[in-house]
Amino acid sequence: MIDSGARPMIKTSESCNIELYIGSINEETSEPFFYEDLVRETSYFQDSLSKHIPVCITPVEFVSGSKYREKGWRVSVINFPRRKATPKEIERFMIALARVLMLNFKQKRICVVGASNTVMLESQQG
Image: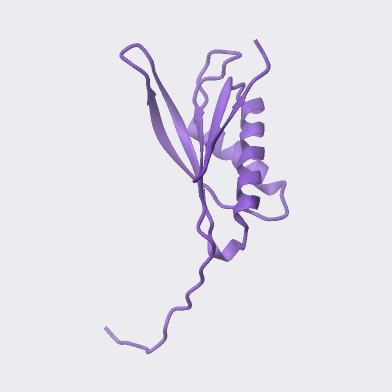
C-alpha cells in the first residue's frame, strides 16, 4: 500500500444524539405500515426543509410483558459535522418529524429521546 502522505481533514461538532421511536400500526385502520412508507414520508419531510438533517432508520420491537409485542422503528440523528446543525436545531427537527409521522401514520404516541429528556407526543384523538 502506498502512503500518499495526505492527512484526512478532521471536523468536529457539539455531540448530540436524538432518537424517535414509532410503532408500525396505523391506529385508524389497524393495518401495518412498512419501512419504505416510513422512508418515503421522512424523505418528503426532509425535502421540505432548507437544511437536510440525515437520519438512520432501524427496526425495533417493543415488548411489554408476555402479551404485548409490536414491531416499529427507531429514527436516529447524530450531529453530523458536515451539516453544521446545532443540537437545538436537531431537537426541533426531530419533534417536527414526529408530528408529521404521527399525523401521516395515525399514531397514538411517539417518543423523542435526547440526552437529557424524553418527549412523548400523544394524539388528542380517541
